Amino acid sequence: MSRPKKEINAKRCERLKQIISETGIKQNQLAVETGISQQSISAMVQGKANVTQTTAEIIVDRFPQYSIEWLLGFSDFKNNAEKCRSIISQAQHEGDLLLSGLSAFAQLNDYQIKLCSPPVSAHGKIAVEDVLKAVRDGYTISHNHVSIQLSLEEMNAFENEVCDFVELQLKHLFKRKGASDNG
Image (cartoon, rainbow, N blue to C red; front, side, top):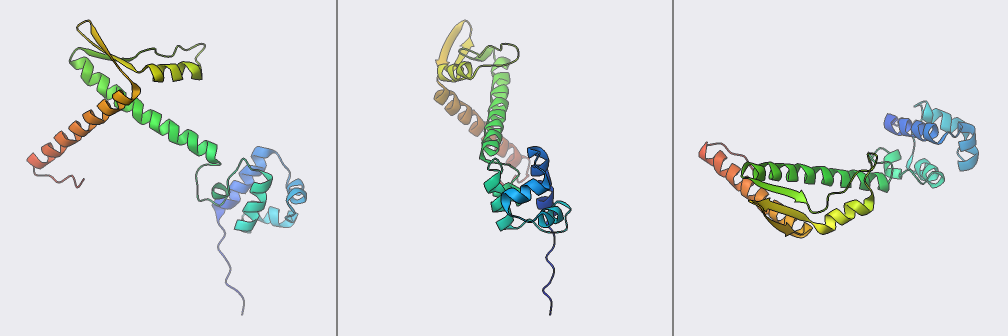
């Protein structure tokens, strides 16, 4: 009795093909460097054989800039650095949205919210040191020619309080209108 044939994971095959393309290595050279037969590599690249856990470990050992999780299709991030950049970018985007909304509400009431020392762009690029200084210096909130300074921690707490207040008001609105927001 023959064993049932395993289904080929096309994503794994595509990712192996991507590694080969991005690194510029030839299939026969990959075979020599990893000990995986050239026929097996060819079959995986063509989608005729699966990239197994063991194969992924061998390939990632040769190309540590890729993660096993990514090669096996369990992650969208090629490596931890890419994952960290994505998390930071998402947090930065959410922070920018929150600050933009808060600034818009403040401006409606004649308040201005600004970074104490906004980073200056030189040729479209902002130095990391300038960004870190701006974050350390915090924010200035101005109204009627009077200004106060908030540290980053104070600004974060203030933003969270405003978000909590808005969420509470929205829940009350849903309740008054007889709708359930289930959250």
